Image (tube, rainbow, N blue to C red):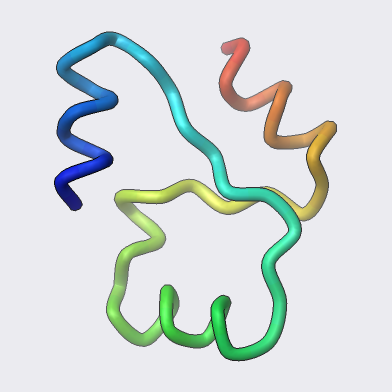
Length: 51
């Protein structure tokens, strides 16, 4: 959450790409998906941060 707030303060964007298994499950269970947008591929993540 600290990373997310710091990125927003700096007017930057972050997207996590291509996560699977236990990492994805932890992010879903802790409801951090709202803080860290998740993309299925690096290309999709790049498009997200360019918007």
